[in-house]
Amino acid sequence: MSSQRAQASPRWTAFEQLSFAREVIQTESRVLAGVARNLDQEFCRAIDLLYACPGSVIVSGIGKAGLIGQKIMATLASTGTTSHFLHPAEAVHGDLGRVHRDDVVLMLSQSGETDEIVRLLPPLAERGVSVIAITGRPNSTLARAAAATIDLGHLEEACPLGLAPSSSTAAMLAVGDALALVLSRMRGFDRDDFARFHPAGSLGLKLSKVEQHMRPLDQCRVAPQDETVRQVLVRASVHGRRTGATMLVDAEGRLTGIFTDSDLARLFEQRHDSALDGLVQWVMTASPLKIAIGSLMSDAVALMVQRKISELPVVDADGRPLGLIDVTDVVGLLPRLPEVPAVKVPRREGFGIVGGEANEGL
Image (cartoon, rainbow, N blue to C red):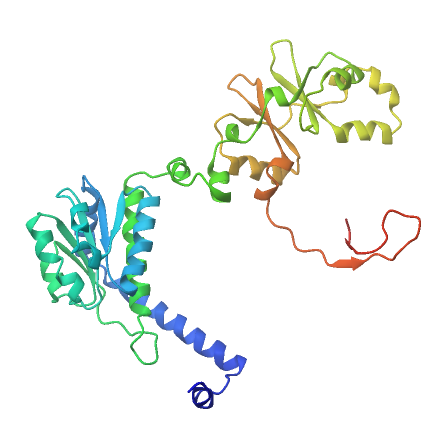
């Protein structure tokens, strides 16, 4: 069987593969453009039902539509609309108990006649639950039972056989995203709200607050600005990982400057050894860049990247330091740099490097 299939489907050239792939995407793109043009008051009626829903939005569908429904449910949940997914087959075996009168059911079915979907409509009606339909047939059983019907229309599937759901599922997904994001905008859902729902991963880190990731003051080097460089280096030591900067403060504890390891190295490179016994405020960076407590980590990282700095003090409303963001703590958030080609390092006897690879230009 496999050999016969291989003979019937000879290997395509790269041109043929790309040509057909583009045709699929262009077909779906045309379908989505048509769906967008055809949205009408039924979409607004659906939005009103969802916005006024005192309970949860229950998304349901089966097969490919069910998979799309699960993604729509996740988008709703992550953008401020409480939502759950209900599998139609499980629903009629007890899970209907999860649906309450205050809920709204968002039902996905291209035909609107799928048995598992149609079977749910009478018990939902008995409970007085409003149904929103996303379907391609406005006269179907599902559409007639729905309080609002978003009609996708007759869609051209990208599948050459016209059988595999492709354009239709893309349209369902797009309409679901439109519902979720319109609701989100209407509720005034902002970046802080988004951060509360996404506390993990790199996205959560970027949307979290600086105080969650800064090194607290007891792990930072802080010194008075009226001490000498030598005094600062001796007394401003802390346990644990060492930061590359000392924050300098005035008599009231307000941040006035910053003195980094690079500043110290520069003094030695320029043979200014005598500056070690001068006041640190003479060689510190005065009025350094800083960020307010409560700011987003994404803003802090953007500032560090734009100004090419390795340490960023975090201050309170009066300008007193509360902590420090060190580049080594946020390196995973920095924009990825182009990969540098590896070069061979020749073996040299008597040296620490005896072979392997090194990064060119580093």
